[in-house]
Amino acid sequence: MSLNQIKKKKKGKKRNRLIFRSAVLAVLLVAVVYALVSNFQQDSTIYSAGDKAPDFKLQQINDNNELETVQLSDLEGKGVMLNFWGTWCEPCKDEMPYMQELYPEYKDKGVEIIAVSLDATTLVVDRFIDTFDLTFPVPHDANEEVMDLYKVGPIPSTFFINPDGEIEEVVNGALTLERLEGHLQDIQPEL
Image (tube, rainbow, N blue to C red; front, side):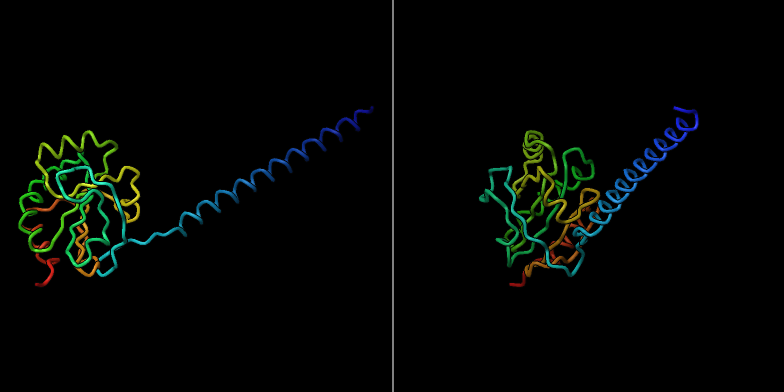
């Protein structure tokens, strides 16, 4: 084998490697573009005032309430305060006593307070419920399905839903007692 033939063979191998690497790179690039486009095309609906609140069903943690599961569609005709929170969230801790203070009065007026826990385990939530003596329904969204459904970002996040099942207001961040009561009055069913 001559030196020229060896050089031609090496050039052929280099060219073949370049073609193979380019093909692999092109396939990877197509896969990345496909993944990005697929993610952007998924349901990216962000719910806001005037939208129909999406239905969900979750197991309740605290058993001192008559409901074992909480399903939004079961509460049709009532105003619903849907709050997303976690025990690690300081602003969430601040607003819980306000929610508990107003709950008995507004429950009698046809408004339900539902505080969806985003904690990983129910043990810490049980302690939290006992510490604050919470009597309103506290369902657990362990897999963050409802959180994803409502596109919740920062917590606490609260959706005020009117008796017709429409979102009246979305509030990101902690609520004061006065603001909370004002929103509960807005979603109270007319008697």
